[in-house]
Length: 353
Image 1 (cartoon, rainbow, N blue to C red):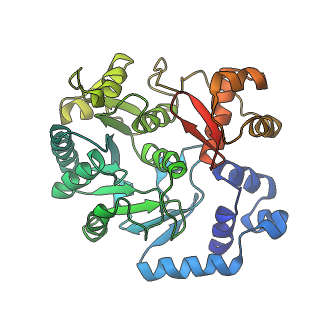
Image 2: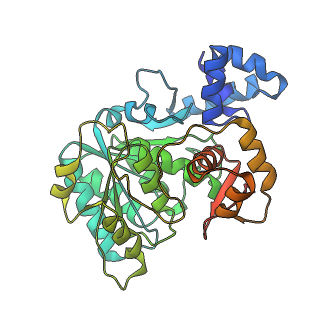
């Protein structure tokens, strides 16, 4: 069963959403693999990956497993395989994500450490992406008093950035967890980070944004969190600092203004809501609308045919495909999570390189 689930998850061109559809249609991973035929991921390659993970002391989790993170399982596009190194205990705690700028200020990093330390002291798992700046500071602060979960874009054996390799080992050794959807040996590329960001959002009851510029990747995490019904918090910053503009905008749009741990605890639920908490929030590049029906496979093919290596404005793509904004947003999210397209600054999209 584990081998078949891994093979299905690793089959090229079959993303998380498509895997769910295949499992529903065929009833089991084995039947889905049989339907895929020769394009299915190699049995030998899957077995080698499992053996390599076992040598690292890591394990694989699939939706439906008792240890699969329950909050993450609520996502429509929950990862169909999750490689975990370290302890599974943090998944049983309430989780709060701290995310922000890689080029964070010293003040921002200090605030992230202090907030993470205070949250961890309250038996809350601090979740972040093990990047430079705010992410790394959040992990360090959490380890002082509790535990943390690091979500990475590449394989477990490819620390990124390299200077955080020691921190990654420390998280594993001190009772935290490092998780990845990617196979071992995967170098983190730009198109992998939106997928990583949805795991950060999906594991969390709330996301705290600290120092995020407009048009930043951090706001993708915030947008995904809103769509998943999670709470959004933002730390106000100086209006002359571009690193604060994104967080300040979130506050204007309804995010909880956050100056300390009590601001988070006051609004943190025991379980995620079933609908977005900030229905009127409009994040740069991607606007939140009423949920739209899932686009058909024909619409996806039409969009992919329209796109190329040259970025195209999203509004123009919608006009050419005659799709409403909610339909197009839902479709682009699916295609981005499947790694088939990439979203670029200026509200543009292109085929993934």
